[in-house]
Length: 280
Ligand SMILES: [Ca+2]
Image 1 (tube, rainbow, N blue to C red):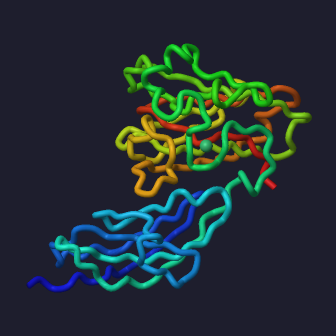
Image 2 (cartoon, helix red, strand yellow):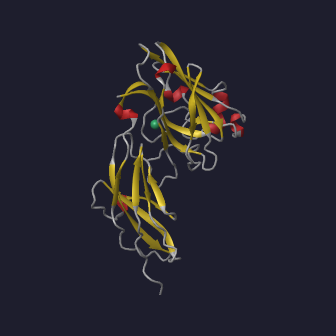
């Protein structure tokens, strides 16, 4: 009879925008571990019941990535489950707080879609990007805040140069928006994704009014976001990620401005929502 599975040790948690990363130490001396079950609650009293389960994994880490734009505090415990289904006693409790997004900390200037961990309100979502992009968006996306419609004019899926279905070339998504006056300080660009490619998440160049404004390296995702669009479904494979650079005020001007997102390397990424915000 093998020993009863033991709780993990070294539990740690750290918050970032929209997400909390939880890590723990593996138990290499216990070869019969089948998976780790991770439970979360808003108080330190974390029940290890099915309704608090946020995910299972064979690795020593998990990311709680559907916390939304508000700063959220969560507490976690991990249960070790062995190959015959026996469960360890719960681990110690660890807590962390996610970082407040510019979506709530700032003042919105222009937005496309809702910051809700879903791509469903965007064009061609959740699964027709690969088959329909080149017909529907032969010149990429050109979206004017205030008159364009996210459901028709902003494709949820942005192909990269490695994607055959996108013609193996760069594509630009342009957001046009108005400013009453040139800003006195930098503006935040908020790019929330429901998923990226697992091995080739790639990079994107930003430009404001055709001037270079930096490059973004995306995190690795799960490659499911080209086909499904709701990261809040329990057990989803989607791996959302969040990018919020603040761009130099000198890039912007009074009147109409353009923000270009050009996928410059790698495969696709799938949007949740995009926006320009004035940090407070
Ligand atoms: Ca969304």
